Amino acid sequence: MSKYLVLIFRDEDAEAQATDGEISPKYREFMDRRSSALLGGVALEPTTTATSVRIDGAGGFVVTDGPFAESKEAIAGYYLIEAADLDEALEIAKEVPAPFGGVEVRPVRVAS
Amino acid sequence: MPKAASSEVAAAVADAHRREWAFVLAATVSITGNLDSAEEAVQDAYASALATWGPRGIPDNTGAWLTTVARRRALDIRRRAQTAKRVLPKLVERTDDPGFDQIDEDVPDDRLRLIFTCCHPSLAIEAQVALTLRLVCGLSTVDVARAFLLPEPTMAARITRAKKKINDAHIPYRIPTTPELPERVEAVLSVVYLVFTTGHTAPSGASLMRRDLAERGHELARMLRLLLPANRDVAALLSLILLTDARRDGQQDEGEQGCLLADQDRSRWDQRAISEGIALLHEVLGRRAPSRFALMAAIAAVHDEAREWGDTDWPEIVGLYDLLLETWPSPVVALNRAIAVGFAVGPAEGLLQLDRLANEPQLSRYGYLAAARADFLARLGRTTEAKLAYEEAVILTDNEAEREFLAAKLENSTGESRPWRDGP
View 1 (cartoon, rainbow over the protein chains, first blue to last red):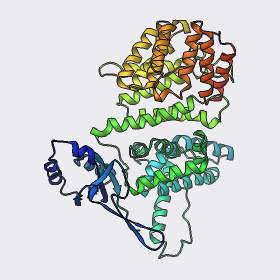
View 2: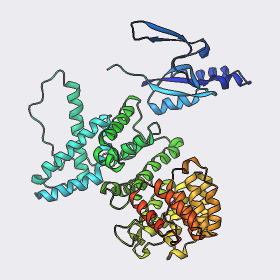
View 3: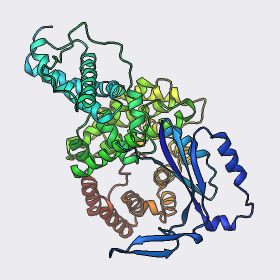
């Protein structure tokens, strides 16, 4: 078995404009269905609450308001999953409710 | 086995390389679980063949011999990797000739697994094509680079990156399950078609490697037909390739560009390939809505069945392009449909259809649109506009032979009115 991180991306503007709201039942349903493959995961507060910390090149840090990379879709949460191979991981990824964006599947590096 | 002369051995190894590479590599990956070490083992097996087939004779079943040696090497490589840190190197290497009785004839045919891995949708299409040529066709990285007119380091990096992704992301080495099969077969067919067209549209005087691609695409389609005999999309692609390739020798003069369907010597078309392609097409058309490749093959068949250029059934071709646009909407298909309309109805109507496509971003750098406009304008006697359109086409065309052809048209822009390129 291999581990993958499923990063959930979301267009926060689109989500704010959506009125039919309540998607958490879909997440609960997904987590029940795939409980055996899920090793962990969290949902995140929106990027308006984010703080970025960068190395300033002079031995210190620069702390700024906002996400690390500005883009239309921001990371909204993640699942750490276990799957036999990429195909199985992609099957699970397709079931993650992500109505305002999509997901990125990344293999977790195995220390050699 | 009788001893063999070195020229015979070289020919037998080259032949086995072309015909058996995919089978041997696919069977070896099953043992190593890793593409790189499998490739190393298979290369060693071919090297052993060169060394041992002379003195010991060429085996009857070269593929089985190579597979046995490669799989044995793979086991050695794996053992060596596992024990390298603890054990001294082996003092005696086992001979690589498996002999008659040790050849394992029952190795499963794993070529489909190899093909589906190389054409996995999580890899970029360029990487899928490069991996297929490298691993399924056994081309060297240098040759793959040459075929796509890229520097070798660029191609080597592309292949390395793709193999690393297969390894690290655990892209499986298996045949997709039934529900996902149609989509995955479509991905494989797109790769094979891309290999074929890259070779097929290569101009005369292009590197041999480039022309070799058309043959490789043809061989890949045949291999798939053998491995997936019940799949109609596979049959459709093989039909399309046969019906297109059948016209390859129809060029009037060697060294001239071969793009003019109108000027081809139709007696030199390969009738056997045409019959085979049409038989396959009959198998495909019918019950179900025809796929993209089936419709393209049907269009090729209409051209192939016309005894003379003037006999071409253009209304039929327009009808097929209409269906193709429904299944595969693309500006390039729309362009070819517009050209067909120009021949079915007349140049004025063709021009009208072409001008509707003028704002398609995908066609804005596409020389064929300007060339087709020029052709219709010339037929309508609008010489000045035709000249401008030819000039535009010359600028946009990157294929040397096609550019020369267009330049000649430009010189004589009152010239004949013929479409200058076939195929969608």
